[in-house]
Image (cartoon, rainbow, N blue to C red; front, side, top):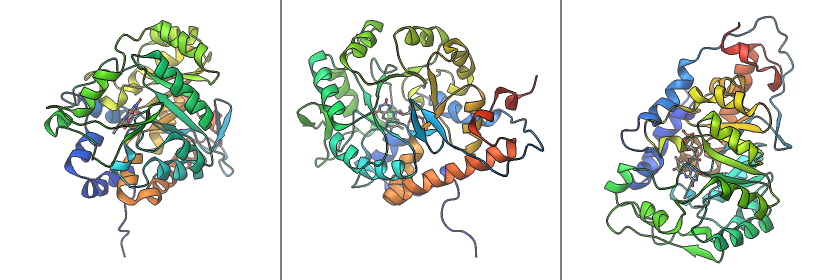
Length: 360
Ligand SMILES: Cc1cc2nc3c(=O)[nH]c(=O)nc-3n(C[C@H](O)[C@H](O)[C@H](O)COP(=O)(O)O)c2cc1C
């Protein structure tokens, strides 16, 4: 008998597609413009080669690591992605349960379809909160209080979206949320829905509410406005990474928003080594974009990253099989990472070093 279920993260996408409306699939899967960066993100990891060590005694292995001082089962977190209830009725609650049960952490999107309080209550491990900054700083401040009170453990400020990328599938589909779904955290008092006025309803909504005037001073503002550690998400250049470290962030997240903002931005794998060198261990470095295999995770860590994030694969698991599907995504990726570590001759995460990408 052959195995009938998905064997890897990519195979979950095909299953998810059959369960999603055309609009939801287009929103989840799509990238900006010609989707060059979307494709490149995945391909860049695949191009790198792993120069494994031999006879390194990998009989006993640990995939555990610490991120922002928290113990994780392996160095992979759930990236913030919007609108999980488009994939499954339980939405972000299902993702939080499966992710924290797998021993790792979830970054909850500002554009969550479930209240942050419900998500933290359902979780058995760390929930971090992704923040889009409002034109009105008072709203951002109230939202910060709300997520702090809910027990979120860090603020991930997204800085690669001063305005919205041109996602043509959303324009074509006039993307909007179904009437029974709301953005539950965007405003401190709770709910907000949006609809299309001719193009992508989400792009119109964000244009109205989010601040395109964001500057480095706003990172300082955020640092003063919360006691939680701050992660800056969307860095692709060493000079920006250095500036982020000088602004007191705890982690720099190398990301191009999964190819959904500036098309033809470089693949994250290609810029990661230079960013790590610039940060020089003064903060953690995380990376996302196109990570689909345990070997991709090894390549990120070998390049100097402390952790990686996966975005779309979580949504594929959720759309395919709800909480169980997300659990399966975590289990498959963890097993792949453990196997790749063993085959590289690494018994622990700190043995994943730069020479694996080519010994000098
Ligand atoms: C459907 C979808 C929604 C997303 N929503 C957000 C969001 O609300 N906030 C954010 O900072 N990033 C968002 N992202 C970007 C992800 O956090 C992450 O950077 C990206 O998905 C990683 O690439 P991957 O999907 O190839 O793993 C979204 C990505 C997708 C695919």
